[in-house]
Image (cartoon, rainbow, N blue to C red; front, top):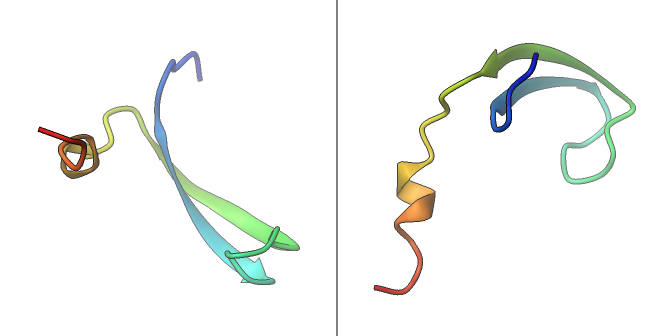
Length: 44
């Protein structure tokens, strides 16, 4: 994809997202994911 930074949406078919899923499908790759709320959680 040539992206330096992206968000990936997954659909876990077999397994648990908290472990390594046994089977999954990539739904979409977001070139500009909305992570502003995570960046703002650091010390001010």
